[in-house]
Amino acid sequence: MKIIDVTCRSAWLRVVSSLGVVAVLTGSTGDRPDVPESTLATTEPSVLVVQPSVPSTLYASGAEVETNWIGIWHAMCGSRRGGLGVPELTTIAHSHGDQVAADAPVTIVDTPPNGVAANLDVVFVLAASVPSTAIPAFALAEAYLESQFTDTLTVTIDVSYAALATGVLGATTPIYTTATYKNSRTGLINGRDATDTIQLLLPNTTKIGVRYSSSATITQEDRVYWTRANYKSTIGTATGNDGSMQFNSTYVWDYNPADGITAGATSFVDVVVHEVGHALGCLCGAGIWTKDMSSLDLYRFQYTDGTADYNPDDSAEFTARPRLVASNVPNDSHHIDYVTLEYRMSDGSPYQASHLREETPSLGLMDPAIGTGVTSSPNYFTTKDLDLFDSIGWDR
Ligand SMILES: [Zn+2]
Image (cartoon, rainbow, N blue to C red; front, side):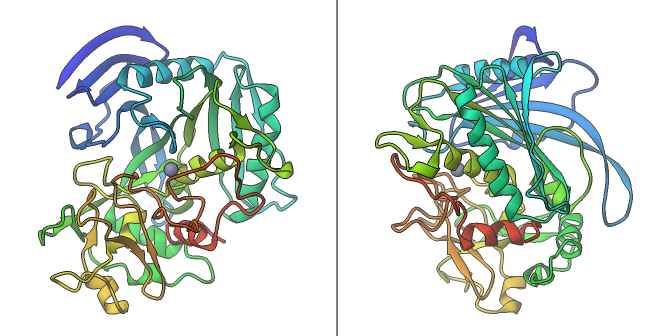
C-alpha cells in the first residue's frame, strides 16, 4: 500500500492509495480508527474517508460501545464508466468536506414528516453551491421517503454541487460500520414490524455461512457491514451524517417530476431517492470488500440450485444454506430470497451488485440504470424495493 502525503484540508491528513484504485483519507487527530481497509476491493474507482468514531448505545442490551465509521466515495449509479477516477474522487471528497464544514453556510431542508410524528425524519443539508431550483426537489424526496417508513430516527444527507466530468451524475458515499453477526441478527429480530417473520429464520448462531466465490467454500462470517442509517434503524444509536452526495452542476437535470421529465434530462428526485436508498442499506458487499457482507446480503443466495441445492426452497433451507456474496460468479445467478419471494439481483457485472437486476420492465427504483425523460414519480419505490428495506430493519 502506497501512502501519499497531501495538503491538510478539512479533517483529513493523508491519502493512502492501494493499486491506484482505492484512496484512503485518514483522520488528522487521534489514533487511527480500526477500519478494515485491507479488505477493500472496490470494482470501481473509490475514495475511502475515515469518519470520527462515535459512541453507540446498543438497543438490545443497553451497552455503550465505541463505533468506527468509513465513507467510500464513488460515482453515482448511471454515470459514464471511467468518468471519475481516484484523483477526481479525492477532489470531490475535499470539495464536499469544505462545502459542508461546520462554518460553511448551508440550507437545511427539513419539513415536518407529513404531520405524522412517529415517522422517519429525513434532513438534507445543502451547501451554498446547490442551486435554488433544486431545493424543492429535495423537499419532494424528503416527503416521499418519510411517508414510507415509520422508524423514529433522523437520516441526514449532506449535499454539494460542482462541475464534474461529462456523463457523470455525481459522486456519493453512504457511511459504514460493522456489527457482529450475533448483534445484527438480534437487532433484526427485535426490530421487526408487525408483518415481519423472515428475520426469525436467520441462523441462531454466532456466525453465518457465506460463499465469497462461486466455489463450494463456505466462510463462517462473524460480522456484517451496516450503513449508519440502517444501523440506527436496527442495532443502536449513532451520531453523524448518514451519507454525502455531490451532484454534477453541468448535468442536464429535471427538478420537477410532477409535470413529466423533459426528453434528454434526468429526473433529479429519482436519483436522490435511489442514492438515499443505498444509504438506507440497499447494498452488497461484493464489489466493495474482498470478503465481507452487508445487512442485505443476509438474504442473498445463488439463484440456481447448482451443485449443492443453493436456492432455499423452504424455511429450513433458508436457515441452512450459505449466502452468496461474490462479484459476477456464478454469472447472473444472484438473488434475494425470502422463501416465499425471490428477487433477482445484479451480480456485479456489468452492473454493481447493490441493485435489483436490470430488467424490462424495471423491478424497481433500486435497479442499476436510470434513463432520461422518465420518472417513477410519485411512487418511486416498488413493492420489491420496499421489501428489501423491510427485511433489513426498516419498519413499514
Ligand atoms: Zn445504485
